[in-house]
Length: 407
Image (cartoon, rainbow, N blue to C red; front, side, top):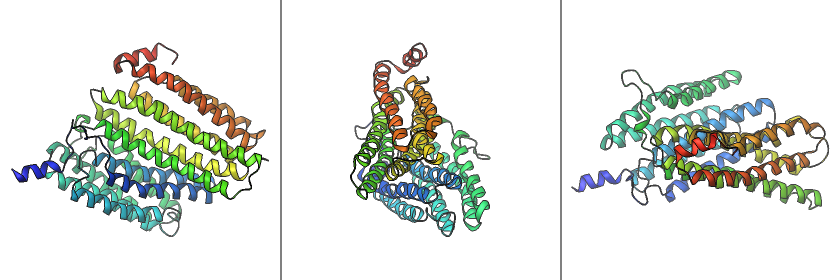
């Protein structure tokens, strides 16, 4: 009896009042990704070119993927047990090596990034397979499939770490293509087949809170960038205005996500007949766009604070408008997957931001940022009313209602 009770404690208890609660060790684990997000934005500022943007996309996809896969694992494993705590601490060490190597990942530290990333993914998956020998056999087979896919991608990661220049980029892009395609293919493996989404018995409240916390991490980078950059500037009416615009923009993004997207998403996933399918698409994929949008917005804030007036380069305009645009796109796709309809507030915001970009030639960074923030504020206000209406309805009725109204 003692053995069976001990074994049961290794896994989260579904339906328990605290089953979706995020533990302190998970919050401690997230500190590594606070550093990783900072490294991503700073390295992009140092390589503010098209090539730098491509590298940012690839590295952001990698950082997000190791984090979201870990969030999925801890959706089943109990983080309050010693083995799982030790796993997370070991992953923190690998994550610290990975994050430290980000700035020079395409130069001198590529092999360190590749090795730490591959070990992170493969080691966590192997540990989960071992732990699940006492749990669900269906879930264990699923993680054997996952381990197979990540081992395959790991070969490309390490090969890329040993290669140079374009070959490194190509091999790492191939590794990410393998990993990002795997969930949509059900992690199909020869002889083992594919995993049905019903196996992903997701704890919706836990997944929603974990992803929300990562958005907080990304938004925290915007706050840090705004404060650190402003502290170095002379306090003038122009710099004070730039500071206020950057801060309000961050608040507007927080409001859009947590007051509309996250709240609506949690409501609909809680009532979904197949929460695993919804969570896989809604959280695993679309939140990457949200994170990327916030990181790019943080870069835009620093550029706008440093050079608020005067001629603005096209690449600066691209990040000033592109960050909020990506953020809204991620929110729109999330709501489209969860609700089953396209939210008009987000769609209108995307169109408005797209119309601002051609004006970049006649506007300075301060004015363009102000107009972008006004769009975000309008979307947040409209989105609140939109979400309130949807959450008063059952998901099936809400989807039909959304298709027949203007939002």
